[in-house]
Image 1 (cartoon, one colour):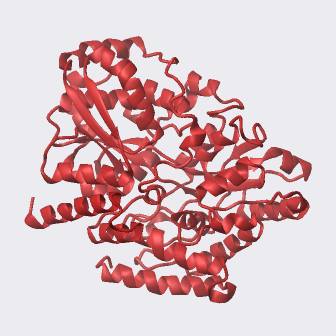
Image 2: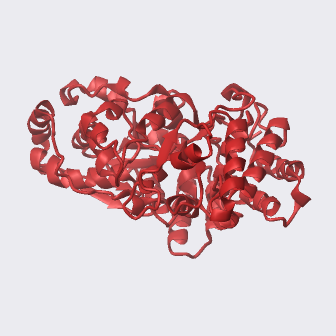
Image 3: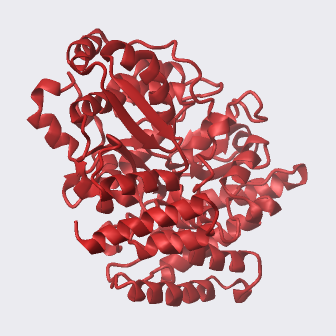
Length: 511
C-alpha cells in the first residue's frame, strides 16, 4: 500500500470518528468523504448515526421458532463447519433486517451446529465504514466479513475475496445447492459488481414501488395507474374529492435540504425519461425531460398534505399509515407498516408496479457515472469476505449460510417483510404464508420482485455524489418548492443546479 493510500485511509478513519463524536457536522463529514473518493448510496447516506428508517414498523426478529434448517444443510454445517469449532469470526454492520435476523439465528442455530462463534457488531453506518477502512489499511484481519454499501465497491474491491471464485476454488467448503443463479442478474450487477469482480453477495435492497388505497380508488372509479399521466390524473381526482376529509391524492418526503427530497425528485426525473447526468458527464436535470420531471413533482407537492415539504421518509410513511394520502411511489419497506395493528389503513393498502416511464426510459449508456435511470429507485448493500481474514474458511461457511436460500427466506419473514435477495425467497412457502394482511406482511413481494428485475434505478457511482445528493441538490430543490427562490420556475432551479454540479464535477477532476 502506498503512503498516499495509507494517508487517505487515515483521513477517512479520523473523519468517521470525528463525526461519531459530533466534532464535525454531517455536511462536513460528507465533504471529507467526497475528498477521499468515498460516497454513500442514496438510501444510506442520510441515515448516518441514525440507524435504519422504518425499523420500528418492521417488527424485526419476531422470534425464530420458524427455524427449519434443511437436513442436507444441517448435515453440511455439522460435518464441514464442525471442523472449525471454537473459531470466532467477527462482522461489523449497520442495523439492516438481514444483519439483525442473521445475528439472532447465528446464536440460536449456526453456532450450535458448527461450534463457530459469531460476533456481530451493529453500529451506525459511519462506524461501519471506519472499522472496515481501519481493517484494510493495516490489513489487520480484525473483521472477517464486511458490510459494504453499494457505493463503496470501488474502494474495497481490492480488499475482498470474489465469492464466486472462492466458491469454485474451495469445493470442499461449498454449501450444497447454494445456486448463484438464484440471485437476479440486475441485482448483482446493480449492487455487487465492480470492474468485472463480484465484491460481495447482495444482502439488502430497499426499492421504490407504487402503494395505493384500494378503497379510495374504488370509491372514485379510478383504475390503478400504470403510466405517469394516469398517476397524476388519479392524484388530482382524489385530492379534489377528498381534501375536505383531510385526504390527499399523494404524499412526499420533500424536506428542504434533506436527502429524502433528492430521492423523491429522482423518482420523477427518471419517471420522465430523464437522468441526473448525460453520457458526457454533464448534469442533465435541466434538459426537457428533467424539467418535465420537476414540474410534475411540483404538481404532486400541490396535491400532497401541506406538511410534506417538512417530511423525510418517516413523515411520508406516517401520512400513509394514518390515512392522510391515497397513494405514493416510495420505499417498499413502508408496506408492512401499513398492515401493522396500529395502522389506520390496515388491509386497505395494495402494492403495484411503479408507473412506466414517460416518454420512455433513458438508456444507461446515455447517462453518466454508472447511473441507471429507471423509476424503481434502489439502495442496497452486500456482505463481503475480507482478503485479510485469518479465519477465511469459518467466515466463508457463515457467509454462505447467512446468504443461503433457507436463511434468506426466513430473513424476509422474521425481518418484518424485508425485501428478499434471492429469487427463490419470493416463492418460498414460508414467505407466501405471510402474504396476508397483518404485521410483517409479504403481500407486496411480487411487486418488489418485478421491480428489481425490470425497473431498478441506481444513482450515480462517483466520489462526490454523497455531497451533491445531501446538500446542493435538495437545498436548491427546497428553495424552489418552498418559494424561497426561482419564482416557481423548474427550469431556473435546474439551470442553477447544472452550474453548481458541473463546477463541482470539474473541480473534482471527474470530467
